[in-house]
Length: 435
Ligand code: GLY
Ligand code: MN
Ligand code: MN
Image (tube, rainbow, N blue to C red; front, top):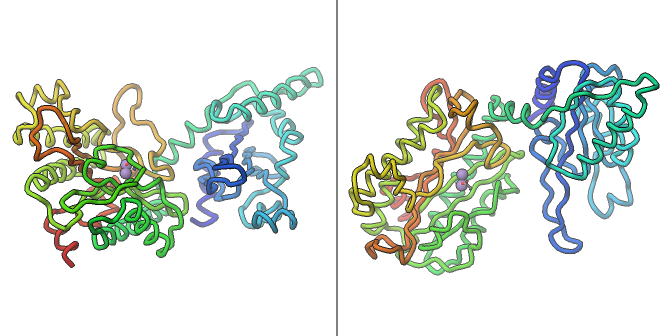
């Protein structure tokens, strides 16, 4: 993502904000893992979307029309001592020279400078309610400006949810964003192929997960978009199984839900395959059903369809199949209406995908499912989950969890499956694993 992309985004946002406004946007806080150890730092997605700045302890302020510069970055100053211990910093010089800020100030001066920036600004764009400590500081800054009313200083009169405007922007991916997401999806797809080649009985789930991380790292993605889910057999029936602590058993399926992150853009792919390379008959029957549902859902990812169309298509195929296999009883219409399929398919068919794996953007507008438009990216991920001991279910179906997940771009024409490079048909998976 080059500097002009970030500049374009800031301009677009400032255009929406209009004159006499100001936007305040902090990055994430560092999170302690244990005592002196921190979790790897990941910038806040909204903040990074507008700045490309990946250091902690930073706040972006946009002041449209300000003569001394519209884009102000508060960040850590350069400090040779601290940098010796904790790593390099862009500093104020870097903020302007490398990140395009018009003006940069030390983050420690935030409380001194911010009130002045709020003077004569009617509207404040700020994501209230995400960080209580910052909410308090913003209201203190506003109070300081208001206290000067008798000196003729006009303070803000309107507060707007910055996140709402930004999330609407983030929902529509630019050409550069699609290119990055396509690279991330391709890399993850290649890593999933690698797992199909490398899996073997008695390998631990976390070991298979590490093969995924290793492949991504060796090809340029040092972060994953979320902790990998690697569930063998019955463990695949836990939707967000991240313990990954058990050995994989010959004869079981293994579900792998994993995706790398590139330049803060996520990929999110799930494949389910047999630990020993061949699907059993009952596994194949359920798998084919999920695949048919996924293909039907992907076919609905078209501009003009609404958000729920892919889900409805998947539910219909799955329910029909479950009735045919004897896992559900009654008529198709009744099973769909009563949602009896939810015993085996309890989640929705997808979510927006972007900088966050469950990306931002409204799913409904004025109470109605939103229409799909070119540039939106979503996942399509139906599944079936039949845990061991499921009452009234034949033994042969038990201990099987299956999900198939791809990342799909809405275009003016056909759905564009960004993650298409990893096989999902039974014969293609078996052929890849046999090699
Ligand atoms: N990896 C989380 C999800 O598929 O939603
Ligand atoms: Mn997903
Ligand atoms: Mn997933």
